[in-house]
Length: 148
Image (cartoon, rainbow, N blue to C red; front, side, top):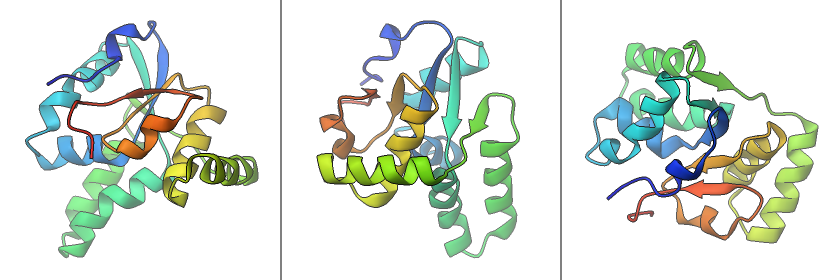
């Protein structure tokens, strides 16, 4: 399997990275390899990656649930302090657009916020493993053939 749509992105394109691809890579999940090209292109300067506070919260939740505070902090730093990923703040403009997306696509609120943040930041695509995004037309959806 491969990450569909990544080769169609122009150099320098912004890509919002949803929680699952980051968690897969950080946790060594079997599907991590399918999202590896995304991170490789970012390291090479071919893509700009973005995350939201929602992604940070969802990704650190696993280590926190297991009582692994140090690991949660390592994950937070990896998502917010590195040169390859930028954090998109959430604001009232994102909230209103998220409400619109929630209604239009019947997305869960966190997913609607993810989408709104990516659109407002000018991202051309979202890398995800969530089938709910497949209905979206405002942004390209990069996913594997095994989307949940």
